[in-house]
Image 1: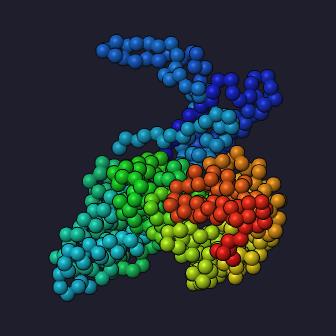
Image 2: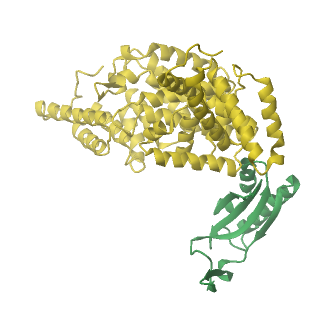
Image 3: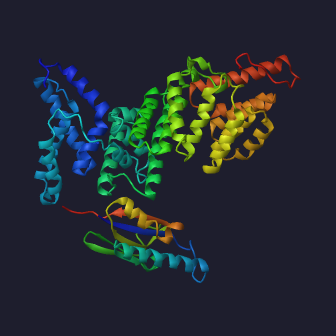
Length: 116
Length: 434
């Protein structure tokens, strides 16, 4: 099965750049990435630019309305994702637990829908 | 073998109900193992039940009812697979189902037991705990959706939706139908045991409903704990949980008399169920011999010490306090400290007990047993006025009638003592006290 691990965190929380903690977090991402590659579970994974760069699109009455900003003004924002190929939810959770942002933010695991 | 004459519909209903009560978990587990889809297994068993309701009144109740249900449910699964679009992908399951048809005549008594896998699925930590409880009662306890709804004081339709959502998540999110291995096993086992203990506690200290003890839920928890002990005998905490439940439940008949709550110290110990105590002790001893102590085994050891004592005064309170200290090291919590304080107070050091209770006041402000325990310590120290204040705090957050009567009785008793001896600080004596 395919699973998407969505990485959420509130702006300004967690380790800040140029601190030892930030370095540790980045090392954590590297270590996780290495494990994913070794175990052959990683299908994709990217970090996103901050929500200030987001554009939201809604088509109403056939017209596209563009909004400057994210879909929802929530405290925790989507910051990146991984897509895993795993046998079970337990395995997906095992790999999602390795994402360093889980220590201060939230990682949501969602199965990818298959159409048959 | 078929019964000679056609049974009446009442007998058919009773036979189906009884079979499901006993074997629902085993049937669902066996079906899920072959089909690989819990939700579909439920649907196929449902189809088989409907078929039985039509067939049995005409052709008689079969000798092996669960064998009959399993066979029909398997055939329904085959039909569903054949009709489904992804037919080719299901060839492995279809082959197994066809083979099962050849191997297993309807009279089989040897349905492979996959219930351990099923309970791990139902108690998966990615499901809400209330959902785990409901799903476990429905699937392994064999309760109907209406009965599960009643246990939660929910509407049957609401409970039906909750169960349906859970089954859908299990399938769609890929919650495995497996016994976890390695490091995952302990965490997953904890979650199964927590669900069973939650079912027991809701029965033993009912927070909902008119009855203070709900024997149905207590028995359900015993059934599930016994099942786990049978299926997973090498895990000492499973034995610890079964022993804890048996030893605690052995006191049920003495805990409420004519609807009134009787605290442990004043219970009529001749009402304690000796069979349950003996079974609990045996199970606990076997678990302790494994030499891997855990929270359930410690709590069961404490319950065993209570069961062995002839009276409250004859109880080995020092040993109980030592066990609570050990428990606090493994699993520190305010509740454990509260229980430690109670043991210390009966062990002869009420001042030390109060010192342990004081820091808990904020955290347990809304926890009735905290105020009741504190009041009891103060009462036994002869601090009547402070005791009354604490009893009143307890009373304000009590929800069951039995406990309300008990707390009101305590307050009246102290006020009565104070009237008789307005200046005395002597320890009040109650004729109910052991």
